Amino acid sequence: GENVEQHPSTLSVQEGDSAVIKCTYSDSASNYFPWYKQELGKRPQLIIDIRSNVGEKKDQRIAVTLNKTAKHFSLHITETQPEDSAVYFCAASYGGATNKLIFGTGTLLAVQP
Amino acid sequence: GAVVSQHPSRVICKSGTSVKIECRSLDFQATTMFWYRQFPKQSLMLMATSNEGSKATYEQGVEKDKFLINHASLTLSTLTVTSAHPEDSSFYICSARRFKQRTEAFFGQGTRLTVV
Image 1 (cartoon, chains in turn orange, yellow):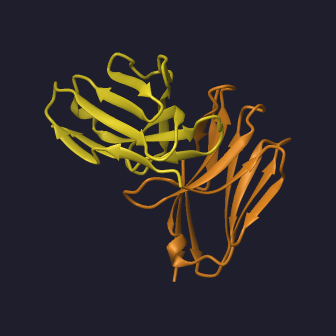
Image 2 (image 1 turned 180 degrees about the vertical axis):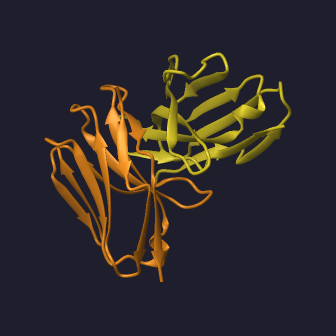
């Protein structure tokens, strides 16, 4: 079935360190993988995404890598700052024409000053 | 930009009553909207996919007669929670995808429903 696994569920890092969050998806037909950041009580905000024809994408301190063979994709945040603290969700597209997004279980990132 | 507005942001209702939540795309046309439910400290669980002019597609385990979805125009989808019970209390959030663009989805601000 449609499933996205996300690890770790919580992650605490010191300011300036890097953070890595990993996701695994189940459907080899998935072709779109976004990452969302959600602060408490607010809507999820898209921070970066990657399509299946690309192996890596970077935007300043944030990067995403995709391994289609292994059906893994990861979020990398470098030089973390306290304002990076939030819940991060990965997602994978499923369903052909509908192209719905199925979300991972989320990672609570805490950046300690 | 791509703005999705959801209303109301908070609602408290009595058991047995119905509540309607609106999701509007303000500056783009959305052929597809998605409705999610989020419990505290948990992920976004997809409830249904709403396509303009056709019936919604519900995920397994979601009661279509309880969660009525209507997508009457390219900018508006509504979710009605019928005969609400305390266990329906949750955070409901919609997302919309641009017309003819099948990837990036933009989220509304969510609705906190409390059934008393």
